[in-house]
Image (tube, rainbow, N blue to C red; front, side, top):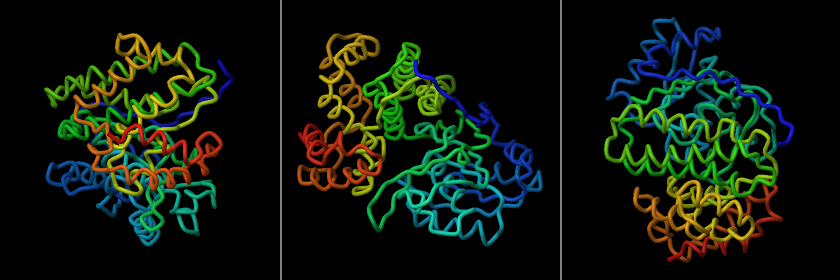
Amino acid sequence: MQDFTFYNPTRIEFGKGKEANIGSYIKAFSVGSVLVLYGSERIKKEGLFGRVTASLEEQGVRYQALGGVVSNPVIRLVRDAVKVVKEHNLQGIVAVGGGSVADSAKAIAAGATYDGDVWDFFIGKAVVEGAIPVFTVMTLAATGSEMNPYGVVTNEETRQKYSLGGPSLYPKVSVINPELMATVTPDYLAYSAVDIFAHCLDLYFTAKVFPEFTATLIENILETVLRTTDVLMDNPGDYDARGEFAWASTMALNGNTFVGVSGNTFDTHMIEHAMGALHGIPHGAGLSVVLPAWMQAIKNDNPARFERFANKVFGVAGADGGIAKLTEWFSAIGAPVTFAQAGLSADDVDPIAENAFGNAKLWGMDPLYPQQRIADILKLAVK
């Protein structure tokens, strides 16, 4: 195990009805005004928006509201929101929604204390050195954004899907109420499960130093996702399954799986971000296409790890057996596993590879992933 420093200051408030306390959670940080950021108007129809804003009002927390965050959130809305925060002198942000809303909130929080264009943080022109506080009320479990300091946003003009991060972007308090996730559609439940798998397997298959504790932790997360996804597909209202799924999602990317690990890369995300940037494909749907193809391409780089995955997660032997079982499960829950199923064709391979190579260069992965290698991986999913 490598030497490490572990830091995660986010407080999780997990349980039924805890969104009604968000005002008191915020007030404890001496924050007197916030932007309430959300996606669709559905949260108003279902009463969640009203519960959140009533809690703010009870605590005397002034607020402005802004909706319209979409899957694959865009920099245009982030820029608009930064203007709102600055014009109204707001002191914090409450993200009510899934990972896209939480990611956008982090970008807005960083932009609120910066005089330049917030996109500077995504292209390495500026470093996030400060931010106004972020709080989240999660309605979907997938990205782990409720307990990490990262966010991903797409620039519609340049067609780049990039990330920002920094210690000041950890949410102060995140509410995880599994009841709020009961209306997640089957397709987005599937995409969420895939995203969690990719967070774990990018690390699992690429880490050079990989402690036994971390291996078993990841395997437990994956087993939990397999089991609870199958339950939720049949019974979306199962609170216990929904809760375990949500916590597995948080644990997959809150830093715990990286403790004592080194030499890992984030390969499938590097490639998928290009699919999202060019085609607007939901993140998990893109990953369900990329992940099995990538695994097939690299299986001989770490055969022992692939053998372990097949045995521990699916109870089968051999790298090919594990990949086949994963692919079958993705298909069974309704996630696409080929270009055609994702609405893409062979003609899309080279543009995606070119865009992904831009990500590879930004992340320092271009020696490992020249453009042709990315294209060759993508071609394994063209069927």
